[in-house]
Length: 273
Ligand SMILES: O=C(O)CCC(=O)C(=O)O
Image 1 (tube, rainbow, N blue to C red):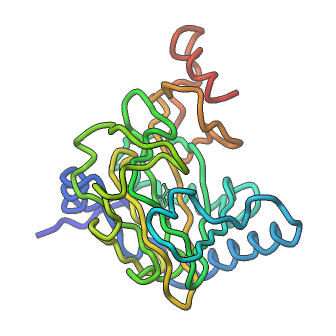
Image 2: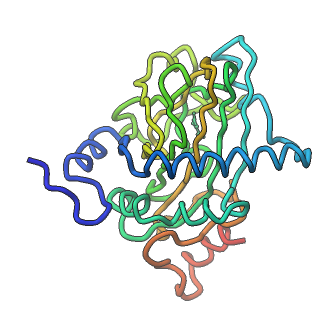
């Protein structure tokens, strides 16, 4: 029998699944009504940015997406949406999200970045299979993504796909053309395990888990917010992917905030800069 979690953490069964597979689809973390509210917030952000002709909001996704499909591709995208919507600021520190993340990372959770993706109907861009580690490597590999689904993401909408257990292989060599990705012949998107999700579900996975997603071929948009989080004591090993808001504590405390000058705090300044 599964013992229900007392807070918003994972059940023992979910923890075991994550440890074995390096990913977990947590069901109904948020209600459908809440998801609809967040969906409206993200679509309004996209509309405002497009109206203001902000460059890069609408794009073809990764260049390497062309290796996955010959069809037209489009992605609406924006980093760090917590600077654009108070509702989304509250969402990323919601205990229903962070308590679950804490059962994977540990009690203290630090934001790396957020990014919203709207995969438009019929041409929502695919992501070739990859690990996230080449984008922002860290010493202890505590980094995880939580993809919060704001609408249903069945297979035909280009839901996220994973290679179960792949995080145990550690960082892999990637190709670096049009996004860091794995060879598409060896790692076809269609060959990976689909994680179809419903509005309000959250998909957690390690930055070492091989993942990607297919084209949205359906008549409806797929809308998600990806929250990338780490243990604050886990330091970056490269001065890359620095963005506004990085370092915000979403749960617990920053265990290195009071570190005296030294190797750790000096390295951390790379991130905080
Ligand atoms: O949202 C998706 O379909 C995949 C996103 C992804 O793989 C990434 O941002 O690293």
